[in-house]
Structure formats: structure tokens, C-alpha cells
Amino acid sequence: VTPTRAEALRLDAEDPFREKRALFALPEGVIYLDGNSLGPPTKAALARLETCAEMEWGEGLIRSWDEAGWIDLPRRCGAKIAPLIGAEPDEVLVCDSVSVNLFKLAAALLADAPGAALVVAEDEFPTDMYIFEGLSRFAGRPLLRPSEGGGAPQGRIEIRSCVHYRSAAIADMKAAEAAAREAGDAVIWDLSHAAGAIAIDVKRAGARFAVGCGYKFLNGGPGAPAFLYVAGDCAGRLAQPISGWMGHAAPFDFAPTYRPAGGVARFAAGTPAILSLAALDAALDVYADVDMAAAERKARALGDLFLARTESLSLPSATPPGVRRGAQVGLRFARGCEVMRALAARGIIGDFRPPDLMRFGFSPLCLSYAEVFDAAGALCDVLATEEWRDPRFAAPRLAR
Ligand SMILES: Cc1ncc(COP(=O)(O)O)c(C=O)c1O
Image (cartoon, rainbow, N blue to C red; front, top):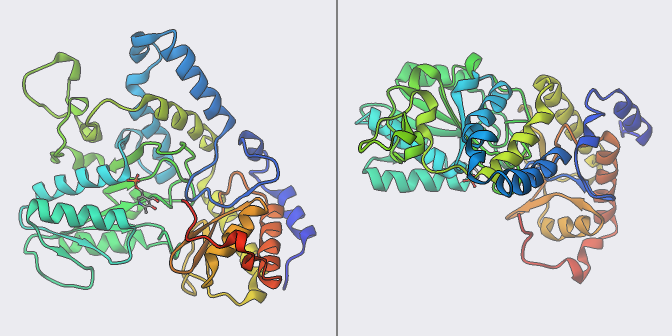
């Protein structure tokens, strides 16, 4: 059944998150379907950036490390992300990028398992593959594909996405963890497209290690620091390779030798990026009262509405049939790049991933059903009229 706009408006009226939209600073006339790549700013994050720069830095100067609580920001942000992924507040640290956190965590696991190999699938997000490739060379350990058995007498350390960046398929974390434990393997979960988008429960799944982005659904801002989760009972035996002073048990003792901090705090390396952390810290407050199961349901419903309204286009979906889908929909069209540019000219922002994937993200807290209905209608129109053939939209590729 083709959905109607009246139904979309009725769903908006019943939306438990309808008040959240006003907390975001989105430009008029834009329908933003790219929060899965770069989340939009919250008004609180923009205000916090100003306060942090002008008051805390400008007036407080170096005193703000203590007086404004800068030194605690990596742990404070981690504690705010923890309930979104089902972790304890002291098991999550915000620092560095996903790439760097993955390197630190995988290298620490390798050091703990002298005979282990690294494992990554060919279709994982490129940085995950590249980091494993580089670490494999650096550490002199084999790099395997998931389908390859054996090759390592003492376990496998695998990186896996919880929500896949192209297909949006949600992995069965619990089953993967059960298999890994039985085999003596370790899985590092990339939660970049999952945190803030779907309900994750690392404890119930038995997940021990994860990394994830701060600038996608968590809305921390461009290049916001990433997060790292290590289950409390695992952190103590892990030695991370970037043994910088911020991960020291007592950084301000200026001791001559390194002694790691307890728990996940040892994964800090250098001085944290305070302006970015301040923005993320404020942005995370929109999630303070959010039931992630309800957020996942809404994201899924927005995606379903988009798919129902564009069904007549018969474009192949990137999500395999019958698979649980995250907060994004991908449709394949050979000239998708031009189509996305034509939509952007109408104020509808999604993105394109070569060779043919048009991606539409559905941030559950800042999008309405009516917007998604209208965006899907615009996609139908751009294709029916072949507006995308206009030379204005012919370009090699979109930015992010
Ligand atoms: C699955 C996944 N992992 C990692 C990253 C980025 O990692 P980094 O923080 O190192 O830029 C992205 C960015 O789009 C991603 O989609």
C-alpha cells in the first residue's frame, strides 16, 4: 500500500521523539538524510563550543583543565555513551579516531595472544581493513579473511561492523560472540553506524571490545573523537602500544617510567582535543532520556516509509531481504551520483558511495515522517523527470 502524507503527519503527531527536533540547529528548507555520515549540530553543542572557547579557554586559560573539568571530558563523554551501548560508565573512553583506537585495541590483543592472527572481511569499512593490513605487516602476523579457517594456532582477532556501512545489515553480535568464545577468538565490534541509531547491549551479547564514531549518530561534530569500549574484566591484562602520558596511572607525577592506568583509561594516549570533546559532551545530552529500542523502531519505520514510497522505482535495495536493518537505506542506481546531486539542489541531502549506492540515513531524533515522505517523493520525481541528466549535476563524485 502506498503511504499517504496524512499518515506521515499522523505518525509525527504520535512520535515519542517529536520534541527532539527543536534541539537541533538544522537550516530551513533542508531535509537532512546524512546524519549517518555527519550528524547535525545540536543547539546545545554550538552554545557549548562558544562557551568553551570564549570563557573556558579565553578567560579560564590553563585553570580550566581543573576548574572547567576538561581533564575529565574523555571519561565523562564515555560514561554518556555507555548506556547507549549497554556498557558500564567506566568501560567506555572517548579519545582519538576509530582508526587509531582500532590499532591500539587490536595491537593490545595481539600482544596478549602471541600466536593469534588478524581477521577482516573484504567488505568491511576501508579504514578497518587498512588498519588490520598495516598492523599485520607491522606485527608480522597473518591477515585472514573470515572464510579462511586455521592459519593461527592461538586464536583470531576479528574486526566486524555491528551495522554495515553499505547494506545497513545488523550483525548477530550474540551469536558471533558465542562462536568466538568457543574458539578462543576475540571480536572487536565497529559500532560506528550503530551507536545512537539502534539498541545495542554489549553485555547481553557478551561483547568485550568495541570502537565507534563520535560524529555520526552521536552528533559530536566534524572529526569528533571516537570511543572505545573494553569490558571491565579484560582491560587489566591489555597493554596498548601508544603508551602516552594520558594513559598513565598518574600523568601528573611525571614519573620516569610508564605505568598504565586501570581499566579502559589506559587506552588514552596524548592530550585530548577539548573543543571537540566539549561539543560531543553537549551533543550527547539529547540522548540522556532516550530509550534506544524506541529510537531503533522509529529509524526502522522511517526507512520502511521511504522504501514503501519509492517501491514503484524498482531500484534494488542494498539490504539483503529478511535481514534486520539499521538506520539507513541504500538504493542502487548506476547514475546515483547525479541523482544525489539533483536531490541536494532541492535541499535533500543524502550521500553516494561508488559504484552505484545512494544512501539515505534516518537519524531517529531529528527527522520527521513527513520529511522522509517528501524526500522519497522528490527521489521519485527526480527519476521520473530525469532531472538528474541536467549537466549541472554531472560531477565525478559527492564529498562525504
Ligand atoms: C564503519 C566505520 N568505521 C570507521 C569510520 C571512520 O573512522 P575514523 O574515526 O578513523 O575516521 C567510519 C567513517 O565513516 C565508518 O563508517
